[in-house]
Length: 246
Ligand SMILES: NC(=O)c1ccc[n+]([C@@H]2O[C@H](COP(=O)([O-])OP(=O)(O)OC[C@H]3O[C@@H](n4cnc5c(N)ncnc54)[C@H](OP(=O)(O)O)[C@@H]3O)[C@@H](O)[C@H]2O)c1
Figure (spheres, protein in one colour):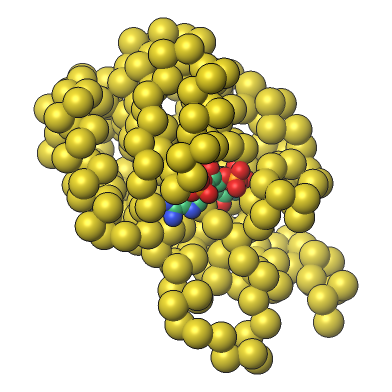
């Protein structure tokens, strides 16, 4: 994709991978809008990225997604790139019969939101040149970590949806890109719970190098290995990754 001169909306851009992508888009003369639920986090991001625009929005809510799209298209009619990055990851004990509202919230943020936002934005993006929908999936799309089961299911589904979306949009001006992170050290799950994995800046620098090369599927490290692995290799990885949760 073209990495300069765009108007880009990044969901969940106030922290972690979304924030690191926002910094890099802003540094390359793009107009950048980020959204998230926490106004204070968005304000913090605004203080450190000059010219950044922010919208408070809970993308788990269909109504808020519609308001977001209407507001962004009205305030930033040049919008040509949507980055579906917002996500949550929850540890769930599947024997505990938790409330559906809690389980469903993860599906709403990680899967319903990117599908719905892609639908809502598509007609507008199709009227632009150099437009793109960028979905952030996961190495866990390919092999699940059993203690975050719904997360992995949503990411596998988003990977699948991204392939179908790319196929259906192949004769339109909208490029469909998938970013497949490995474990990255961010606040995923909550501050202090995901302090492992590769450095977020190292990962975001890699993403931009690959975007500049025109790549449409961008994985890194273990996620790159997983995304290209055979079924036998994935079975082996599943056993190894999950052996500590038995
Ligand atoms: N870190 C990893 O190891 C890793 C690996 C593979 C894939 N990923 C994916 O990368 C993406 C970014 O995650 P991250 O690691 O950067 O974690 P993060 O720092 O927790 O970022 C997630 C962002 O999503 C926003 N968000 C969550 N729920 C939202 C909602 N309902 N509405 C709007 N925004 C919402 C959060 O902001 P608010 O809380 O303010 O709403 C936050 O800014 C996610 O899709 C994640 O699944 C991460």
